[in-house]
Image (cartoon, rainbow, N blue to C red; front, side, top):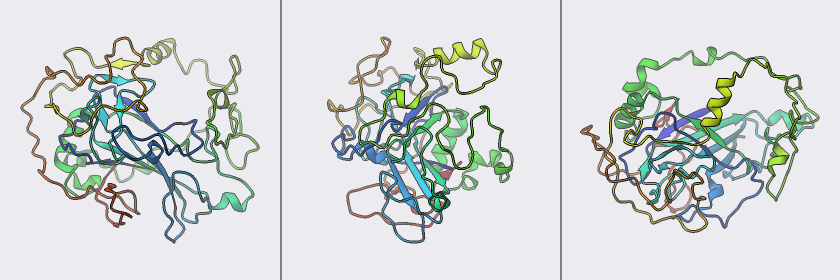
Length: 354
C-alpha cells in the first residue's frame, strides 16, 4: 500500500488536517457505476473516486471496477479522498463535513466546504494472478466482487506543525519521496516494512488461503443493486468473533460512541496556531444531488462558509502563483484531469509517499 499527499486544487493555500479529523472516501455498499450522480459543482461521476489498474505488462485503461483480475504484476486499487472541509466538523458519520474537488483529483472547492486540504490518494496492490489459476475469485472483505464498493478510511495522526511544514515546502515542488522533503527527514525509516510484523488472527474463523465463505456474517453481493447493511453485518446477538472481553474497556467503548460526531471547539480550531482561509471560492453551492445535509443539531446549513472571524495568523505561505500540472506518482497513477483526453504516464517519484 502507498499513501500520497498531493498538492492539488485551484486554491494552493492548503490547510493541514486538524487534530481528531476523520473521513471516509467511497461507499462499501456500492455494486454499480452511477454515472448520473456527479461531483457537486463538477461534471465527473462520483463513482470516479475509485478505480483499478491491471498490471500485466500491457496498457490497460483504468476502470472504476475490477474489469480484469488476471494481472501477473498485481491489481492496483486506487481511491481519491475529499479535499474540501467545512471548517467546523472533525467527523460526521455521513461524511458531509468534507467534499470532493470539482474534478475529483483537482479543481475547486464548493462554497459550503471552502477549506482546502492536502489531497489524499491511496494505492493498494493485490496479488490476484494466482487466484484464478486455483479456481477461486477475488472478493473484498465486505462481500464485494465488483470493486465498486472499494473505499478508504483516514484518521489523522499527524503532528500538525510537521504536516504544515511539509505542505508549505513540498506539496507543489514537483519532487516526491519523503527523502526529498526536509520536515519529514527526521522520521524517515528505510526499515519500516520490518517493524510491523504479521499479527495472529483475533477470531477462530479461517482467514487465510481459499475460503468457502467470508469471515463474519458477510454475504457476497454482485449487484447491480447496492448491498444492504444487513448483507455486511451480523444479526443482533450473533458473535462470530472470539474477541478478548478485556480488549475493549468500558472507557474505550464510551470514547468511540462520543467520537461519532465531533466538531471543532468554538474559538479553537485545534491547531495551536491559525490560518488565513479563503473568503471566496471558484464553485457554487452543491446541487440537490450533492452530499446529504449534516444531521447534527450543532451543525449549521451546508451553504454557510467558515465564519469571517476564523482567526488569521502571520504564518507566511509563499505558494507558487501559478502551477502547470500537479505531481504524478510512480507507475502511472492519475495526474489531474483537465478534459484534454488521455493522461500521460511519467515514471517519476514526485509525489509525497508515506
